[in-house]
Length: 490
Image 1 (cartoon, rainbow, N blue to C red):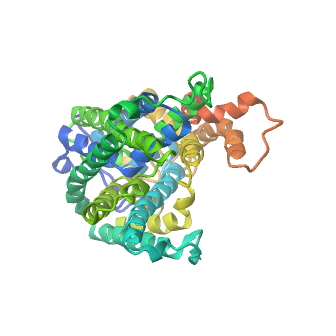
Image 2 (cartoon, rainbow, N blue to C red):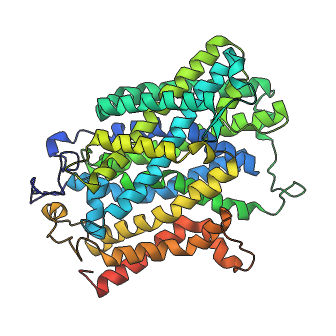
Image 3 (cartoon, rainbow, N blue to C red):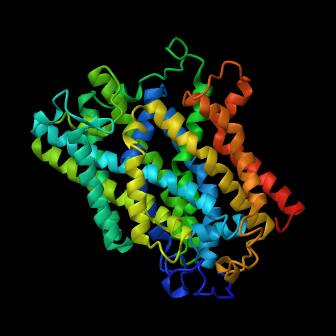
């Protein structure tokens, strides 16, 4: 690790203890720590739903698993690259953004990333609350009686369970980030056990893996979607990249604790793609089995679990799902936005307050609507936000690796009048690159969410939305470097 010179001014309004560089003595994460982090975060219900949504879209088992594995191999590249600055300088994501976007302009990528995290926080909290609700409804069917009172688009019992689980998340946040370490270790074992239980059930109920794995692709000749594979594959691949595009930006929030670059690179490479592929296979196999067993696709694992009648299995499943979802939620969806909101006012917003803000916005986003169906999960939620996060990743990597050759002025990152002040704290070059990278995907997004009619728009323009992360990353990368060459201080 390169020697770091220059210490930040602790009296600066851009400084607080949560955003401060981690000293060498605090960098204790080795290769196994990063591998364990990704194994724990990847083994989660959204990973299962990610795979099963591809099956619901028409893919067969190997097409779905290969798409997920490829998407995670691709997103691993910006993940490792953005982690470099965190490891070298001990800085979190919002501070790293100051180099390219400016000391004040860093609020733009930080808030964009934070709002996506709020959505994910809401989704994970809804999944945990829904697990409680559906399993309780097996014991007390009156909870699921049609015609129950509504609250924000779901029944009052569902909303109550959602808020109970939300309260548990807030309690863990209040206790501090250290409280999730034990949860992450226990959670990986619990969810793996639950996944294997479901896999065994699928094998037994469907008559072995033969019928499950022989399910044809809906894109094969003679099938309902024959000849449409590539039209589904590329947006699906973009969605798979979008799944972890959030973490590929804020990975410095974790890599700042790494012992060395080798530890963060090897740990992430071992922990991310393989775990995603293996756990998604469970989702693929079980979802395929539901088609055989029930005659239709059941893509939500909680719905599958509620069909079991053994009380022990139901209680174990509820506890495992809740604990696993809680651990993943805090690690993946609170650490970053808490730091990102702190970037707005480092002297006033602490980690706890940032976590509370995350939780409140997560409720307001009504996450049950984001995961209402497989197509909306991939084509609206995952691809939609990748159109914003791709350009941010392109700008950060272009700035750090190409323009600055991995050299940052650590003290200036915390100074309102240093090298990264630009124009009143904002980098116009970075903002232009961000807008230029995101705009090509905007028409396709607006058509997809049915805000405009795309009948009279060129098909090529609409098609760019399917490649949102790729086009945004590439365009922003080039535009940023060109702009920085023309206006080094712009």
